[in-house]
Length: 298
Image (cartoon, rainbow, N blue to C red; front, side, top):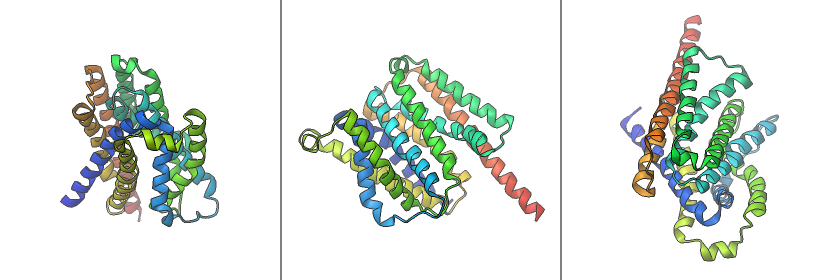
């Protein structure tokens, strides 16, 4: 990659890291599901012109991807941020979606992994157990379970998306918002009963700006820039750098949010990130080996 592309990738990681803080701030004022609804509504308004009808046979897969990566993933992680006292543990634990997606790829689409990748998955999961023993995390186990559930649905959507074809980046974001809004709106009405007049009167401007930041910055600019990069570089060359997201989120959490992570959280987080990096690099090695074998066969 060129230096400018590295700068763009670092900027995207910073934007995604700051999104944890923006969401944590906003959900304190308007509720996590209501925040998710408003976020998706704004995303849909901005990317609706890119909406394109999917190809034949893609509807069930598109719906499953959108509900997994949209309504369930975001609804659960924002709910976790609403219950957690810190953003560091949420940002770290979300990274287990990488080994989860590898396991689901084995179970659902028959991918094969070796003992080295399995060791990386085991290391990441052991790190989750260490994080779970941190006193701060033990005091908010409900948030821990919500994060792990969110990571599972993100992993599931990631695996299902591999079979999705004919749907562009911004078209998928538009469908993701459109298909996620109805179930999320029903849940928000049932659990939080939001009233626009009350929200307009009581929610501070900073919380509304957090909604805009999450929709425009994290979703449209962040994901748009990320997909722009992977159109120009192999995915395996980019994904290891995404581990900067939880690292930056922890730093921002300490500097801005007032997080005080204990040694168990930091040690467990280091194990999680090491395991995730190992799984990512092993996947990168396997893909390059397959390409080399195919080229040699030609």
